[in-house]
Figure 1 (cartoon, rainbow, N blue to C red):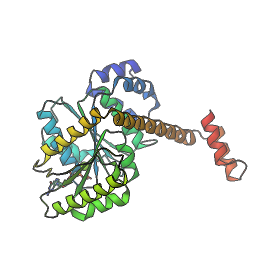
Figure 2: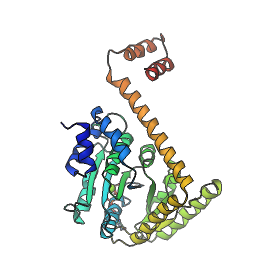
Figure 3: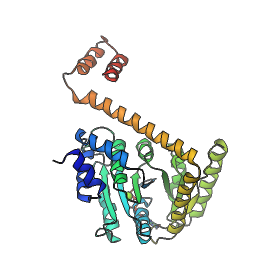
Figure 4: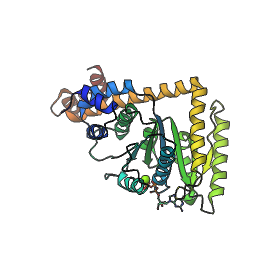
Length: 315
Ligand SMILES: Nc1nc2c(ncn2[C@@H]2O[C@H](COP(=O)(O)OP(=O)(O)OP(=O)(O)O)[C@@H](O)[C@H]2O)c(=O)[nH]1
Ligand SMILES: [Mg+2]
């Protein structure tokens, strides 16, 4: 077993085997990763962290593969984390196959990892956040986080990124689903993928209208999310998308106050997530503990949940 210093040294030297092992420990909920994680956070802050999300089958993995290819052709190193909150199985296997098809497996400039909810004690979003700390400390130029699903877990995961690409297709009214699920506001860039579909232009128009409405309701939002059409199978539109991603980062650089406010919110969100995770562990991990018997007392109204929470918090 490596010491925390040895983990930090190996990870910051971009030792991919060490990183992969460390991420497995994060995924397993091993509390021994904490000291190294604290140090790794302090060493990070250089990677561009980009989230890619959208409904199942929208083409997220294919698009992730195309973006990886594009960035590699421009000399940038890329790490990919594929997250599937809904699946007990590793959803990244398919992603791995797609990227392997694109010949990235032998490329030391690419790191691919998948993560599913299985075996994770505590929140998956926190495990993703911790893994991003590792990838950031490894100084990959670009870190792509792919996550499937429509809902809270996806929103939580995307909060760890600086630019969120919300992928939709022309089929099945994805944009309406997204609006219903309340995830429209997490998108910094909207992509209508499968642009070969005859309804693609209509989907673009609907999204543009929804974005205009959001902008009217929140005039303080200075970034207007662009809509890009792509065909991730052929690669059409990927150049446009890359340009919009660069614009997003240029915008953040030229608006340091907004970038800072975003980062503040990210850090505060992380702290809240960690507190929640700690409380969860405290509740579940200690049968026979004081908290455990207080819960028994609360069943018979001898105490109450507020007092139990106060007790955990004050310890
Ligand atoms: N016609 C068309 N099909 C596409 C395009 N992009 C992806 N596909 C296909 O759509 C299917 C799903 O693609 P994936 O990249 O696996 O989609 P995903 O969003 O990662 O899927 P999950 O991770 O399972 O949610 C595959 O069969 C792709 O070949 C496109 O631009 N046009
Ligand atoms: Mg996928």
